[in-house]
Image: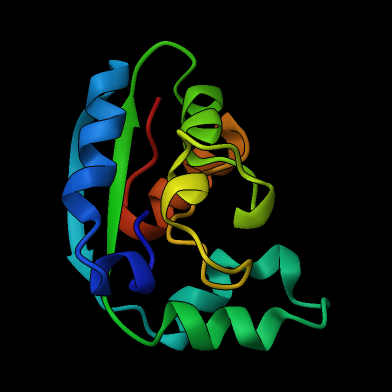
Length: 130
């Protein structure tokens, strides 16, 4: 997903380009606004953390580009392309390393496992992949 800061900065096309150049296939994409309920479901595992409210406020502040990518080892490949959560620690060549400025506004979200990907695709697109 390209988060509100990435959409606002006009980076959706560049982020998609990087995934495509790597060889992943974009199978579904949807630009959408995020309400508090969807945001709460998406970030449910962080509900007890001190930064939870900040996550919800950020993801609901503007539109996001939710996407489904497929390909060999898609989740792990995407995580490498995205880079570490903290852009200051992200190497050049990663999305966060090249464009990120701060940990809380870090441009993109990528599922951390195939199980999370299935759950998140269900939330954002209303179906569960195989």
